[in-house]
Image 1 (cartoon, rainbow, N blue to C red):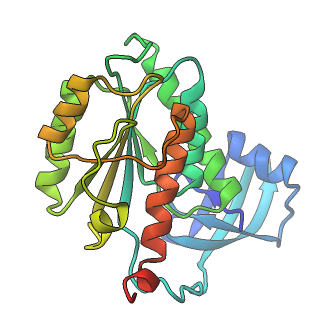
Image 2: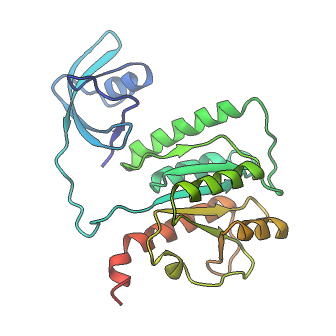
Length: 259
């Protein structure tokens, strides 16, 4: 179900006031009127039902109420957080990767500059991040994802590995999967995920993949190498394909763990 993404929490009376683009989307595009309801997601990820109280002077006032618990049969335990470490691709491909990651309910996207990335750090990075955040909001509203997806500014390789070490320190049991086109796999994806880690980090390279030295550095940092299939994919395809494979295995773990 499509859900509107709220950028702020309701006040102590459970009232929200929406202006600007949010107002135009709900009042003009969706043509909501006073008394109507729409489902929404709070900044922290909780679901609410919003009743429109008034639409006047460029402000939509709504009252939030807790939404009835959704049917979660077969999903008694929450999925681990899935984080994408994505090497910066050429052109505007990152926009597509961000959109697909948000639709796929990934929790974080961490762009980084690798050896084969055709990307230069500059003072326009903040503008890119703002655009990616808008893309995430649109994708979550379109897909109905309740996962709170965030995106970071592009990191240098040293910064990326520092963040990786921070993740492992803060959340023991975190695993990293290096998706690489060379036959480096030492186990299966099922084996890597069978203990249901709290965080799964997926590392995907740019056009041309990772260099040999980069792949070695990932493995020295504790990433586990994995190859899915025998085809070489575009980077924007690989990120979606790998994230979907991880998510489906985790969603269906109750069935395959019994076999």
